[in-house]
Image (cartoon, rainbow, N blue to C red; front, side, top):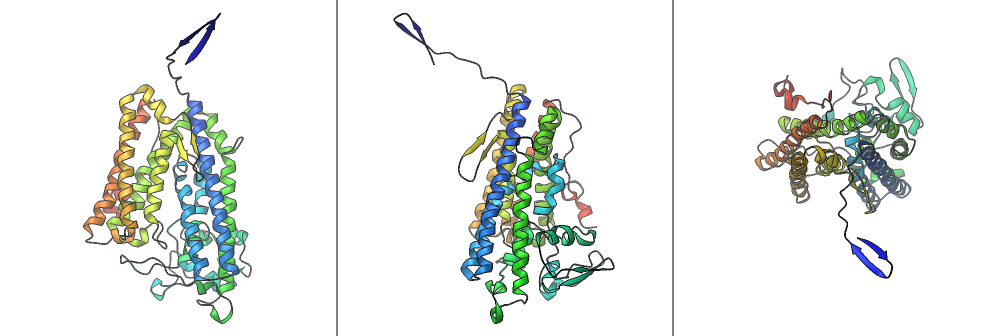
Length: 420
């Protein structure tokens, strides 16, 4: 509305101004802003988790352990929405293994059930239990493990011996230390580590309670610093922000690569279809806590965030701006409508998984052989993710972007290879 004053006459005119076309630079700035906010939120909630961990170690109790577990689950919400920034952004993908690598050989860290087994040809440290050992042999040398510090975890223990299964840091190492192993298979129940695993003196269960607390504290501190590092990479003058803004075509390609690779090979394939084919709860993403339904849901939401150029922060505020949806709508409005509809369909399917888990059918129970209802729920998510990937491929063509490839998965591309 524009009010024009002519002498003593007031003339009101409604001006229908066309919306300005979104520029690729503006779209990339929104993308970087969402990444920065997501990692800042992740670091803040990791800090809140760290406070609950400190409280548990200082005064162990069932209540303190429950509070730390709740803080861990809350901390996953913003982080899972950042996974869409992995593929296509080498700065993120090279770093991600420190904070979210899975599955892990948890016997490296702490005591496990006898059914877990011992060292294997693939991983000689599979059952090390560093919490119980102040030194160990690694490639012919003796490693001093008397002090469990963030530096020891990140520089010595993580991926020790070159094995990716030796995950010593990040969310899932912390998850294991809070819940312990889930020994229920596809039956009801998550990990059930007793709070007395952190108790002092004769009340200590599992042995080495002080060292277990040292490990948990060190892993929590490291998670916070790693997330703060990544948030800084997306801030003004940060390396990740500069990389996507420095080459607009490459930046838009990175957005689409992240969406397509997470949708298809990573989430639909490795995280969902593979576990269902094997009926294996060990393929569950948050396997100790039975939080996988939330991980899948917020991964899907992260993809939607990037396309729509919107992210709701943990304080309820909104980060939003020119989006990939705007670019798509400018060249093909029908294609944009198709993408929005498919994202909504996928989120409904992931939402059904989330609701069913919260109502009592945990994700690992959905994986059970013969659970037709569980299979239908999981495959609804898989099918939605695959279907939206096909539209992401069409968007890359509509935007004249070439040479983009998405991560694949044998579970989708060569199912027979899964069983070889």
